Image (cartoon, rainbow, N blue to C red; front, side):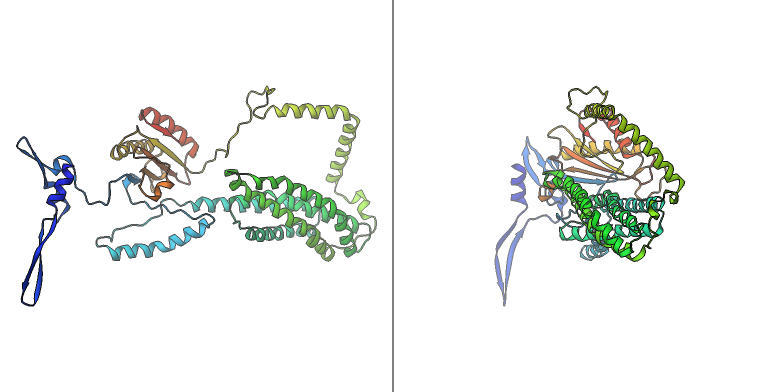
Length: 480
């Protein structure tokens, strides 16, 4: 209270009256306010035992808006860190592209508004869209490989280039119809929807193959391509519909989930359901149409002549026929064996009492993956000041450098795997507090970004740092 009272009494601006001189009326004031912030350090607070006590003896005057409760360090230096969060439903990639396009314009406005701001540097230090782009690119790559392998298998087993092209045509058409359905349902192209589409690639091909194979069988009886397409497609319409509905029903309950599982897996389930519905329509419309247009009629009975099949397929057919005969001769033994193995396999599920397996199948939300980044949460003893928390974080940063290497955002050090290190300490007493895991000045979280080309995975570095930090910096709660 002495400090507050001294500032209020000595740092004042008091109007003392006015003076009328000629045609002008001058306002007269008594101005005892300091011109520079450091002058506040010389304010007299009180006299104790005949000795003056100045503000500098008990406090420090700084030019700031409020008491500092939050500190952000990027690569070991205090920086101004502006996190940007997208609104629910917004497209991450579009937002990042727009922000990057505006950075130059924003910097120029800052330079124009403030003197001495020519050396201000605006950089994107953490871009979550990179992982979204990489994930989408990887899924697209896997889907293309799956489509290629599916076409190759069709070519090998059916032996017709035209048939292969008809099958492959069903893939982009089904994918296009799926994307239209995703757009109409309010979903976006993301990791989960693309994952569902990649999951359904084989199922999409299956329906087209069933239709094409049955049309080919009718062609071998001497029918015209048009008649064979009509008869072949109409025969399999019912069974293919039942198979499609079965798969869709399996994924439909995912839509009824709640919590985080609903938001994670509902887009995947919707993608599979839409792709299966689209593939069914394509298999019974486009595939028969292409068969009638591009496949040729065959002599009657040509499909029943096994001599036309390659020797490799003939050997497979004979082997399968012999195996099937032996299985049918031992139906009881095979049935009991399958039932016993089924009961034993249930023992791998957590919670089953009769499990004798040395280890059970574990449970987790996501499998451990090398994402290239990890987060360290640090909590000092309750009541720790933000300044002391920063000293603690400096020690943690030094340990991180000893294990991973010096931060190297421009990839200039081949011996270092550390690209970026962001440390966020304390809580900003405003709405941003809702977006941080920190609860007070004793808390901090650190984002460790590794280089794309690194000697160890993020999981390995997490294990090494966990053991090292517990030993080197005791008395604090640290988790990775």
